[in-house]
Image (cartoon, rainbow, N blue to C red; front, top):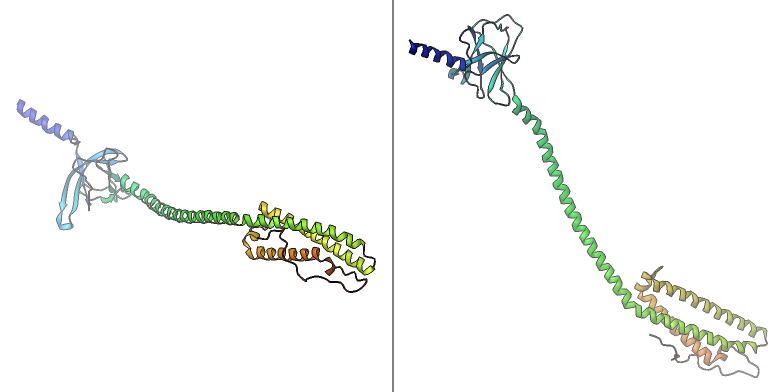
Length: 311
């Protein structure tokens, strides 16, 4: 008798642990799924979150493309309307599968009827759907960033080349200034000496102008004095221009680079030096005072004045 009682207790205890209500009757319903996603016997059947039954048995229907026939035990007091669905869903954070009953609007179903099969996508599917646009956007962002980085690399190469060219240009300009500094200093020195020579020439011409008594001689003297003053004014302007060139202002770059202009100025200085030297040595050639006849005017050109250095 004790052995029989132990076996009965073991039987009822096993079914109670499986979730079966051995003291109440149930109705059996069926539902057919193409895939049960890990559903097993004894998984709960819920109605609005309340456990109203369990999965009794799962059979493979090989004659129906390997679909699965799931038997559900629902408590007798739960009426299932016609058109109700059995939704296969995840069991929550703890895992597993459950079946949610979604009541229909038809007449109550009878024992052994078949429910409509549906599936809930579950949290993983929702997360996958939500994450897919983010992954796509992130991939697009990474491609755009790669393009931007490639553009920055190309820009960096261009900037490096520009800076290199700028350094080369600066070095060339500095070298050009150093090469022409001696020429500029020599030109300034020659102009200073030319200015001094013109002043001395003007002093020598003034006594001759005072001895002229005729209107023609006076007019010639006045014109020559005006020429000397204009020359002095021009020399003053040349001094200012050379000071600007030496300080790097104005068109200093053009003056430094233009070798033709330097050559022309040098030739002009040589010609002026010869002219003034001839004028100082033979002033009568330019100021004609004839009283008793024609005088010797001297040679038309004098040798270069050695007091002025021409480089």
